[in-house]
Image 1 (cartoon, rainbow, N blue to C red):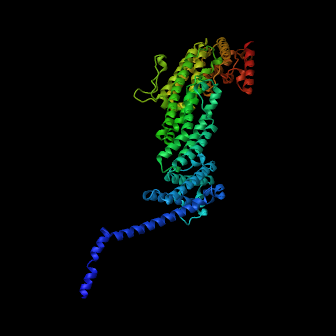
Image 2: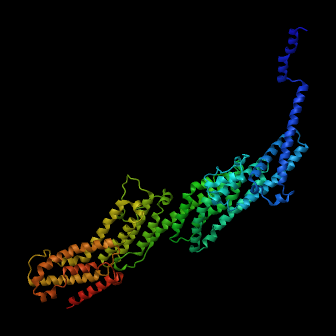
Image 3: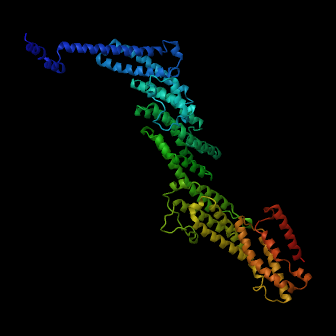
Length: 638
């Protein structure tokens, strides 16, 4: 055969043959390829099942006493990860077998192995949850930086070269507790992922919910939160309820920062592969305890008992919820936990209503005070002390009070004298509602004190009473957060009123003493006129001094200002008169009969004024005062 013909015979059909292999192989060729794939597939399936059977049966608690008493994840983390991978591979093989032959013996074997594996993983999941209660407590878990991060994951163990020692090194940068917590969380996630992917989510979730809910419920109970009805709370003495509120304030801090935050972090991490499972688990675990926690303030706010201190407990509860509101919304962000958010919001509403009611009660308490007892010496009235203590404490809650009364209508001015309602704010400048409310309550107090001052028969004493009480108001404003709410202009305006009250007291109480001295103290006088002038001064000073010796000015600054003002008008003029007229009276013996006081004596006597009774001063002051009074009493009786 010619060479060309041989070449033509050998190569002419090459291209068509190649085309057939790509498009339509001959039945014999297709059958061969399919057979090979089936052989390879069967071999792979058998190897996978055999490998899975080896490790799964090793840890079959029903077939091995060792497996029954030993924890896979505790004994060998590397083998535990191999167990998880084998189960995942087995799951893939089962899917393949179902699609090819749902009744094959291999599929039945794989299913049996899967049931054994799931039973093992259930046990491991339960053991990790129960044995690590101390390391999976919400406080330990909540130290993690975020809900989605984890220090270890299944990939940490994918490297076949990893050793258990290398795995333990991962936690060097954090505390031992946090490390154990992180490892346990990672193990739980690995098991949960595997069981959910294998169709055993229900069994995994059931274990998780039972154990974790018991931890949350136990935590709530230990924090002192218990289910109570409105009638139970209303029957409580205030001291008992007050203690429960204090417990609640501590409980809500721990619950938000650790208890529920930690549980949310753990739940989000363990069931990261399924949003619906995360929501279902967290809701069932936390909803009951959280609703109980956030429902308590609403019940406490509704109580009919309203002692003054209730206001501040209500404000404390309002602050606790409002300051943590963002965290509450974040932790209970699921739709299925909306009832928890609603409960917290309802409590805020009830608490704000209670605050408004208590503010109204406080104003009413001031206005209804009907005591007509005159304070000895024109000192501080108990209503002033009580009211300013109350308002000073209120000022510490100015932030939450601003939220609560932001839409409250301004108080009506018609019920009080117009002269008392000179607002320090212009009509154009915005006035914070809390500032208006505080200024109004002080105004109500001042008007009430003005009415009480009228009960004094001695008008001068009524002015001293007003000066003392207004000075106390200003002093409390200056030394508290009230100064920021009322402003410097308000303080200046009321300080001017104190000066006015003090000047009126001085004019009415000491006017006759001032008038007993001549207008021109250095003008020449006859001996008789000088004697009469000294006698008149002695008598008026003694009468006024003894009358004013019982007066009280508690504020040291105001006390010094009043004494200095009196001294400038009295001692200065008397000194000029004394120096000019003492020799006019006569010789030294005669002078002693008519000139009872030296200028220094007047200064000493004035220095003892406004301390109230003798017992109100220090022992040294009381002693010197008594001595001076005896000295004064003796010569004037001659």
